Length: 100
View (cartoon, rainbow, N blue to C red):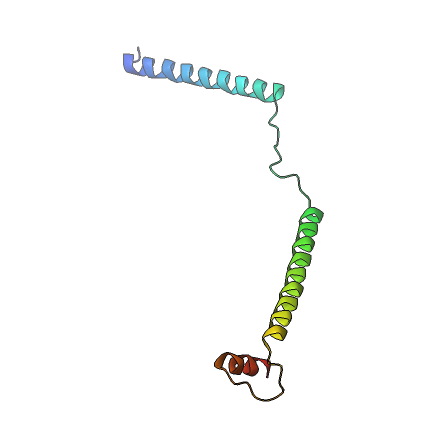
């Protein structure tokens, strides 16, 4: 008994698909053997480089704080009243309260 035409067509089509995918898989294997995937490094810096940068930033911040204290102290001394008594102007009173 002969199979219906649609069954024959479907079976031959499956064989063709199977052969196509096998050829495609073989080709992919060959390409992979010839040119294996290479890993690319996105960043080359090390932990020590980051630590060094952090140390530099910490030093800069400390230096800026020292300079700010020095400027603040220098400005305060210039604005401070010369007499030991209580300040007379409002600005002098505010500065006197800050000093306390």
